[in-house]
Structures are given as structure tokens and as C-alpha cells.
Length: 458
Image 1 (spheres, one colour):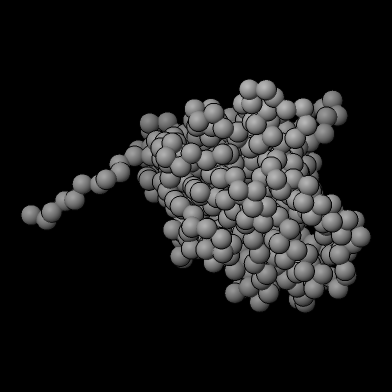
Image 2: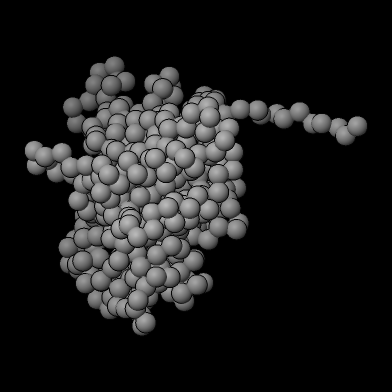
């Protein structure tokens, strides 16, 4: 009889990640006129609505095929047909973005065949575009779902471009950033006079201005025509090194465009910190032929000045950084340049590339303990031994920071115990300035709160 080796670790406790179709839903919210549809149980859609609403503080409609016990046994085709009909009748969408769940993936629903049958049953009718992405959470995170959904959009629409020649546009794939970050990046592209296709663009749809009206589908988002043009753009800029790297067969959207449509790909890290932002501007200057506008030179100069002013508060402090993998890489690179020593990098992502990417792209000055496939209980256990001065990550690390009595700087996703999570800036000189101030002030406040005499001036 074959020996069966017991697993040392059998379950994730309080996972340091969110589900795969959640990431796909965010991408679909960044497409004009799109309604996300979760193919699975009602609970999966409710979970996603709950997280998105608590972070973005917006009404977020996520439709569901509402699996019952019957559909779990006999398949979800009939439920999908009913859901599509309901969405079309109630929302009149331009696009329906369908993300599968663990349940529909486990029972083996063949989405390509089911959608083909649906279209045949509606022959002659004017249907919205139907896009699907396989997003089983048992093999990924919300970051995987995000990047796979971007790739699915490009794969479906780029081959449909009517343009026979390369356009002057560039395709900009920003990765999973805040709505404020997306606005910062879009402004930079405009000021450098770079015609662009920004995918996805949920800067408006998930952070909509109040106008007294409820809109079932908020205005904004990347149009389908723009996505079609990605195949004829003259270059792609794709932010993030790891992306969906855990699946060696999967190509990122940028890789697909380069291999199938000969669109040159510029792969950069998230532009957090001076060095990473400099790298982004160098690429943009090269593609646009225009120099960095004076406004950004001044922002950079003020940021350098802030580093000088605040170094005594941050230098030599020890930090734990956790969250989505590419976000952790970007944050560690920023911490290196302000003199904060990262003692632990942790992510629930399972690419196996986190440590390698940090050492290749960041080249940290000290050895860093790096763990992917980590959960919050693992992080808590490590923190008790490492005794960091500060934690940097999303709201889900709050209970650890509280136990250790150290400051937590909330960044990334989700930030659900504060107002304005969607408006946190992380990128470019402007976002880095806000991050630096947050960290320095968190450490100053900690010193004041724990001083027996208090400090009025520091």
C-alpha cells in the first residue's frame, strides 16, 4: 500500500486573500455598460457585494445565477439562461461579464458551450456582448480573478478590431489599484499627450459623484470599441510583475497582445515610490516623445524634500507588509527608499513568485522573510516573534495590530473600517507623498500616545 504522508497544514484560517470572482467583478465594473454576473450560489454574489460596498461605499449591483441543490447536481445552464434574460430586461446592458465560482467549476459547466446555446436560442435578437472568465477560488485569489478577467476581455475583443494598421494609441493596463490611483494615472497620460486605452477604468463607476439619481449602471468605463483597439495599439504598458503568474499556461493581457498581435509590451512594477515612478515616467516620455511636465517635476521635488524632513521618524523602523502580491512588491520597494526595514512580506497569493520577484526587482538591503500562501493567523504568529514597529496592509490586519499595540497604516483592498478607502492614493509622486505622510504621522502618534510626558514638538 502506498504511503500516505500527512499534511502539515490542512486549512486556511482567516485567509489573506479574497475570492477570485471578486477581482473579475471589479474589472467588469470598469467596462462601460457592463453588469457582472456570478455563475454560482447566491451567497457568492452576496459576499462580493458586501466587500465591494464596504470598501467603495457605493451601491454595487452584482447579479447571480442563484444555484439551488438541483442546479448543483444537474448543471447551471437553465439558471444562467434565466439570469441573462432578467439582466437584459432589467438593465439593458451593453455587456454582461460572467464569472464562474467554485461550485460551477466543480460540477463542470462548459461556459463556452452554454453561451453558444444561449445565443442560438436568441437568434435574430439584439443581445449585449457576453464575456466569461473561469474564476474558481480554489486555485486563485482576487488578484488572479482581476488579471484573468482583463485577459479574457482582450482575448475576446482584440481580434475583432476593424483597424488594419497600428493606431497611435497605447494600451495602459494599471492593475488592481484604487479609484483615486486610476485618476492620477489617467491625468498623467493626458498631460503627456498620450492617446490611450485605459483598461479597466472603474474610476467613475465605483466612485460616482452624487447627483440625486440612482443609476442602475453608472456612467464611465472602458468601451468595447476601445478594447477592440487594443490589438492595433502601438504599445502596451502593463503594471505588475506577478499578475496571474501562478498559472504557467495563462498569458496576461499584455503578453497576449504581444504574442498574438505584435504589440510591444512594457512591463513595469506598480509606480509606488520615487524610483518606481521615475521608471514609469521614463517609459511614458519615450513613448510620447514629450518630457515630464513641470507639475510632476515639482511633485517629485516636494517628495524628496518630505523624505529629508521626515527621515528621522521612519528610518530604521521595522515593518510587516501584507496583501496582494504585486502590491506587496511595490510597497517594499517604497519602504526600502525611505529606510524602513521590512521584516515580513506576506500574501495569500500562491504564485510561488513573491520572494523571487522581491529579490530580483527590489534588491532589498536586508534579508526579508517572505511568505505566500499565508493567512492572517500565520501573520499574527510571525508578528509576535518579530515584534515590528508598524503594520502596512488592508483593514483585515487590524486585530493583529491591536493585539501588538502598534500602528496599522491601511492601504490596498479592502479598507472597510475607514471612510475613503477607494480614495487612498498609492501611485506616482502624489500618491507616494500621501503614503509617506501617513506612515510618518502614524509613527509620531504612536510615540506621543506611549510617552509618559507627551511631546508637543518632535
